Image (cartoon, rainbow, N blue to C red; front, side, top):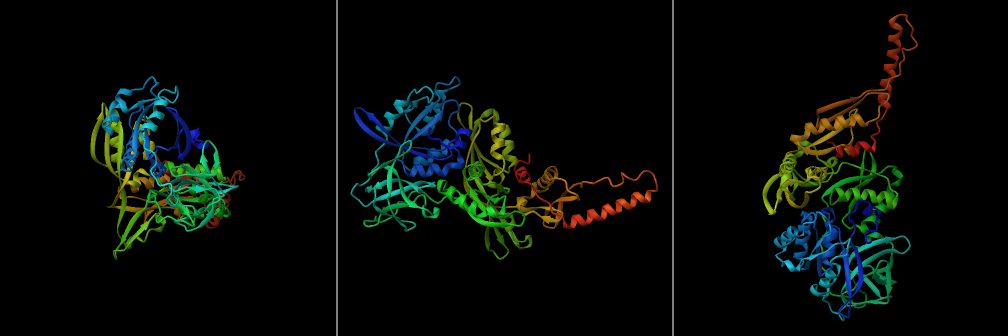
Length: 556
């Protein structure tokens, strides 16, 4: 019910966390439960961290057919760090291939809870749902806060509505708020009138006032996207609170890619669309940049590849924006010979090779959970991506957790897809950043007729560069449409060409009309054609289709 985005329904995943309030009667008393449904995928962990900062407890839902997965563990540790009360639940217990006993053992190993604390449930048959609601009331503490203190409310999400402006969702930590109050957002210092406040049911339902511990929304006619920051604190203008609520840290994007409008005049529309999207997804960051091949666009930071794909889809569906995406990469630290450090997100921004002392790339600590029969192929995959095995441990039965140190740049393109396909969907993967390390990296340029295409240039490890350059040239040869002249596709590191392919020209048969006669007549016509081709090559330019940019991502 809560996954209301088309994308969520098509893919069967949660992308946005959704807050909702429900009333529940327990032993004759009426309780109000404020619930948030969060995504589970590693790319949307920021949604989870925000929700955890606003909650008192969490339901740890584990699939009875799959067992504990890697992202479950990382989200669980996040909840434990915030001292949340955790209720373990096993879902899909009605399935034929469910293995509730084994999954219970895994949860007990992980949490150290008692077996009777784990609730068996099924969303399809409704088994155990009453037990879950009772456990929420019994085990999870109610929000602590002072009703009479000055208002302190934490903004944990916001949405853009084309009729009412920006609507912010908040949780009241202290004090209360009435409709019509004058309020101020502490971080931006902007003052507003609370035109409408209310709680989130299946739709928004207005209320006259909200009290300490309530979760609700505020409509105050805010028009500019930059005025609402997730994690900001709302307080009254007259009776302000002393300090803002500290909750969650600024998000650090992992993957960077350029987004360019297909039509150059759509640049401003793209900016407006990205600002509106950022309201709803605070983990998206962007700044303007320009490219020789693609014109004006934005350099965007994403939390991962799925996140990037979803943003692209949402731009298309919600704002009708068609964009070209460049090859995704990560940020590198470049040290020059004077000892200065520069952070580079884009291979086009690299200094000259002669000025660079060394480059450091970001590393991650990855944990992969899988069944023991897939260990071999997964280890081969990780070694191919320059991974170092730190340790492997058996969790329970035949399930293994592998810990790897890996360069983030290697997993950014297709690692997740490959992992899923070689493990038949059974391996789960989670990672967190682990600092920077020196690495032998080179900038690989792609030249078309001697002109570099900056959107296709990449930073790659020196050992993979020749192979990668050759594969890239072969792929582009298939994808570039033939022209009236030869197109030379070259891969180069600095001034050294490491691979070349040629897209042959289209030629009209000019000698068709010569029937017999002397060979010099044919020669004359061919020479004339050759001159024309040479002239065309000087004035002709090569259009790179969007397919070519995408194909580089899926080179295998």
